[in-house]
Image (cartoon, rainbow, N blue to C red; front, side):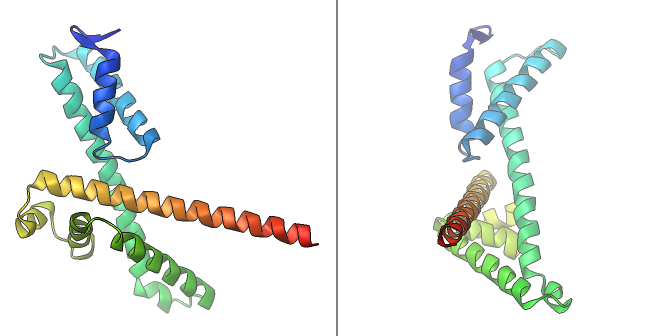
Length: 184
């Protein structure tokens, strides 16, 4: 089936998936992004004349991927701020609550420490020191687009590691509950 004149739909889907995987790591996120990209391109062709549909599709995918990365980055920033917010500790948080916050913070530090060096450096400069992408690029001597890619990778890896940790904890909790029931 042709996507646009001279462009096969399955080929462009495969190419867009490969391109989206530079920014996103979960298969369902990649699938969603490709689907949304194709939908937007199809909708746009009815509104305006697009000279190069392939280029337009890749630009759309790029913009949508950056939107996802930005949203994930905000979530990570909110999470970091929550963990680092000293005022939480001052508002009468229980010892158990403080232990959970400390454990979450330590887990996040471990995840960040396992990132590739360049991803880790970019993430820390952006999220801890608050530098702009341009400032990070200048400091590290890399392109702004490279900073974007490292941030996307770092955030995706942090979220994936956090999800994996939570699933492992849930699995362990279920096994312990099951074991407790058997002992009774």
